[in-house]
Image 1 (tube, rainbow, N blue to C red):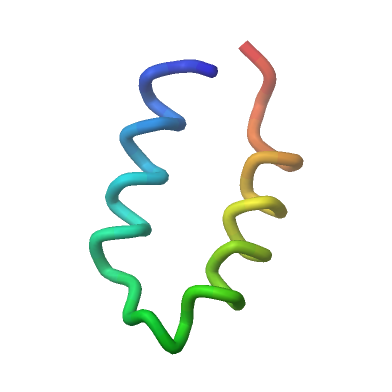
Image 2 (image 1 turned 30 degrees about the vertical axis):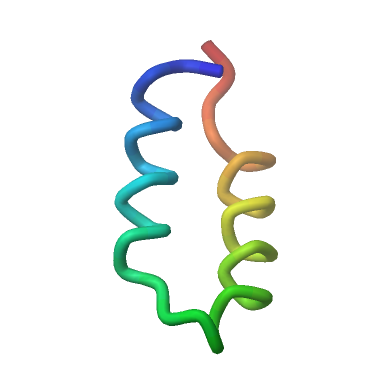
Length: 38
């Protein structure tokens, strides 16, 4: 996993409220799937 993606995941997680966690997990998964491969 590239450092950039990891950094972005941390940014996303920092903004997330617990109630949004499920939605965010799906969004992160989608983000990873569509992220350009290094």
